[in-house]
Image 1: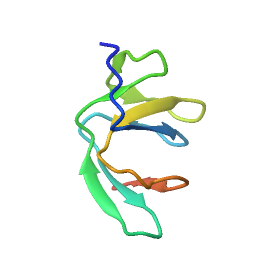
Image 2: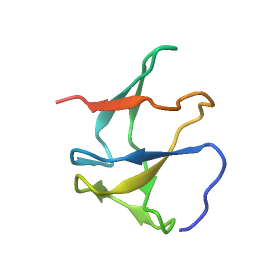
Image 3: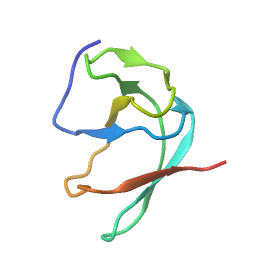
Image 4: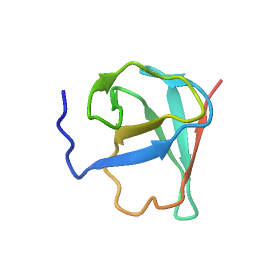
Length: 75
């Protein structure tokens, strides 16, 4: 699947996370929680896991102002 709607955001991955993980988006405008239901690699292919540093993923998040936000995984 290579569909990339405008409602996706790109994240530079530092630590491993996968579909089903619960994440928190940390931003001065307010924090958001989400469960990763799907994510895509740079080629637009559906992936199940971002293995760690060096990966860029696109997540379907309906938010306009998340520039420079941080993402934390709940353990």
